[in-house]
Length: 113
Length: 109
Image 1 (spheres, rainbow over the protein chains, first blue to last red):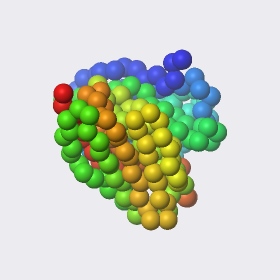
Image 2: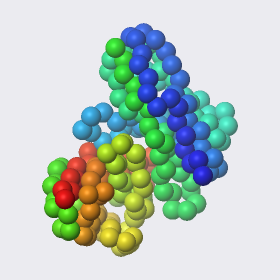
Image 3: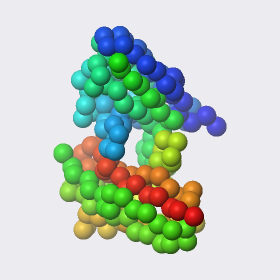
């Protein structure tokens, strides 16, 4: 079972570059999330989606964009990368059924230099 | 927003010891989960426990929602238990989980 799959695992960007972090899940979950984790900190919510075509901002959305055209995919776009966006990014999904447990991808380690 | 405080921030145990990790939260919640982040960074869901008590092997968790805290018990700890343990909660009107800063656990042989 694949679960939540994120690509790439590692990436180095130059300041001002753009990129898309890919996330796909095969559990037919309606809810999907993007979190970032800075060293020694918990996870902070960037964006979330409650279904295809529906997205909303989390705690730290500035500098990011998302889209949700299908149930399976929830890409995160970084525009004009800045050093403050150096972090580990996690995609997650959950369902209202089954107790709403949150399932995470393996993370993307991003450095902006 | 809701405040999620975990204690202790760091913990070192010898293999075989027991420990209790605590999570305090500042508002009523309808979702509380415990996660383990292993040394390779992977986040694993341990418990979905908005109230009551659950057990899974050497791990158990108790949430007292009316008093706004949850406890994670680790018995007979093993080196593979090392990592960071996160508590995450969701308020009744929210959609997403809010995470504490975690408890970093090191179990030594």
